[in-house]
Length: 359
Ligand SMILES: *[C@@H]1O[C@H](CO)[C@@H](O)[C@H](O)[C@H]1NC(C)=O
Ligand SMILES: *[C@@H]1O[C@H](CO)[C@@H](O)[C@H](O)[C@H]1NC(C)=O
Ligand SMILES: *[C@@H]1O[C@H](CO)[C@@H](O)[C@H](O)[C@H]1NC(C)=O
Ligand SMILES: *[C@@H]1O[C@H](CO)[C@@H](O)[C@H](O)[C@H]1NC(C)=O
Figure (cartoon, rainbow, N blue to C red):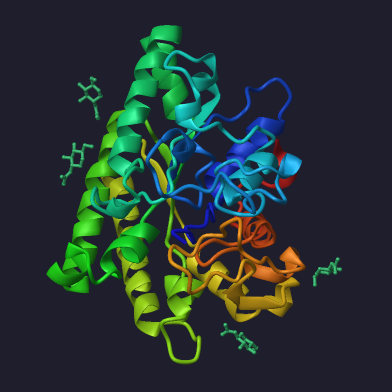
C-alpha cells in the first residue's frame, strides 16, 4: 500500500455525483484521478523502464476478462468500484490517450504506481509519474480541453469535475521507511511530515489554480499493518510506530484541507478518512467475511518488491484474504471499503448529503 490510500469519499461530492449520474438528462460525472498504485489503472505499462508494474499474471485474475491491466490487485481498484457506483466507466490511463483524444473530456486517471508527494519518492522504480508529473499532465489535459471546447466551457467542466487524490503511502513505504534513502536518515518524522504537508499544500493549490474545486483528498491507511511491514516485527504484528506516524500525517492533512477550504474561494475539498475503515477490516476480518488479514494471498510478504510475480503460489480462495500482495488489498477488500464509503454517505446529516430520493 502504497496503497492503502483508500478512497473514502465524504458524502458531499460522491453523493452529488451519484445523483448527477443517475438523474435523467444530466451529463455523467467527470472524474480526474491522481495517486499511486492504489488507484493506478495502467499508466506505468507505458513507461518502458518502470519497475513498478503489474501487467502480468496473477494481477487481474479476477478482473473483467481475467487479464492483467496494470492494476495492482487481482480485480478492481476502489476507484473502479466508485466509478461503477457513479454509473460511469472508470477513467482511462492518461498515457493510453493521444494528446487530443476526445476521451479527455470524460475524465482521466493520472495515477502511477510508486508515485509520492515528493519527487524522489520511489526513485528506485526508475520510472513513475510523481504527483508533480501528474499535475503537469493534467495541465496538458486542460490545454487540450480548452482547444476543443473553448476556454469558458473548459473552465466550467474543470470546476464541476470531481478530483480524487490519494497519495502519500509511498512517501512512507518507499522513502521514509527505507533506511538507505536520504529522507529516512536526513529527517526526523516531525521534519518529514512538515515537508510532506507543505509540498502537498503547494500541489493542491496548483490544482486549484488549474480549475479544480471539488477535491476528495484521501488519508493514508494503517501502513504499519500491511504484510510488508508486519514481517519486520517479531511476531507478525502491526508496527505501532509506523501507524502513529500515519495518524500524525492524516491529522495534519485534515487541517490542511480545512485551511485550503477557508482560504480559496469556492474550494470544496473534503478529507476522506480511510484509516479507521481499513484498520477495522484488518483487525476484524471475520466481521467482514474474510479469514486472513495478516498475510498476503500471493504469499510474497518477505519477497523483494512484495509483488505477485508469475511464479508466486497464490491462495486457493482469494475472497478470504484482505491483502492480495504485500502492499495492496484484494478486490474483495476494495469492495468492502468502497461500500463502506458509500454507506457512510447515507448516514451523513441531510445538510451535507441529499437523501437518496431527492434527485
Ligand atoms: C519536482 O519536479 C518538478 C518537475 O517534475 C519540479 O517542477 C519541481 O520543482 C520539483 N520539486 C522539487 C522540490 O525539486
Ligand atoms: C500550465 O502550463 C502552462 C503552459 O504550459 C504554464 O505557463 C503554467 O504555469 C502551468 N500551470 C501550472 C499551475 O502548472
Ligand atoms: C496470521 O494469524 C494466524 C492466526 O492468528 C497465525 O496462525 C499465523 O501464523 C499468522 N501469520 C503470519 C504471517 O503472521
Ligand atoms: C471462498 O471463501 C468465501 C468466504 O469465506 C466463501 O463464502 C466461499 O464459499 C469460498 N469459495 C470456495 C470456492 O471455497
